Amino acid sequence: MGASVPTILMNFSGIYPAEGFLPDGADILDFTSLEGGCCYCDSEAASAIRDAIGPYSARGVHWLDSGDYHYASLFWLEKVARPFCLVLFDNHPDDQPTAFGSPLLSCGSWVLEARKLPMLQAVLHIRRADDICGLPASLPVYLSIDKDVLNRDSARTDWDQGTMTLEELRGALAAVTEGRCIAGVDVCGELTPGKGAVDTDLITNRRTNDILQGILLNLMD
Image 1: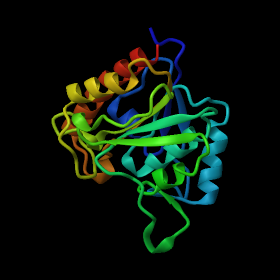
Image 2: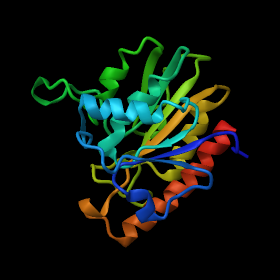
Image 3: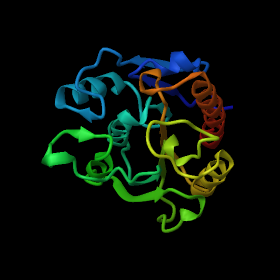
Image 4: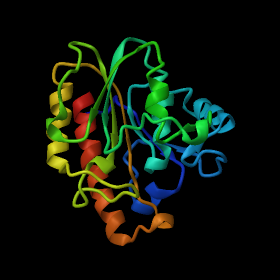
């Protein structure tokens, strides 16, 4: 089940090896030497990321590392070649202009940039399980999940977190994808040792990642 759906780990910080989260058959893209890509993404870093993901289609499960790299969703969205909706599970809207009018793409501005894509028809931002409404009928969906939408029993992140349980997230994912094609999926929200993660945080996130990987492959199968 899910064998035809690729899994791609975008390894910016080294967190996935630290957690021991290395799904069978996953392609690992090494960005640990990338400069100009933490929280903000300059043009050189953006070009390097686009080049690295060039051989892949949007359809797949893409793991983006910590929330500092959520902007990488934009590069996957650029690959969707037909009209679609973005469904964003996130405790933050990520559609704010960058500070001081900076032209740099950031983890807080990427949705604002994504709204300019000609194929993107609508954005549904979900913070709570009952936020599911207003999704245009029949269009494919691209799912972007920041684990900071979850409570601390389910995930440990370096941003302020929401209240959703993992089971509520499972139910919300099923609801927004029922009867729809899934154009692609990405997940971010890891907590790195450099930002204070201890063993219990890594264990919690690894457990949730394993569960989410199974859920998402099943949805896309």
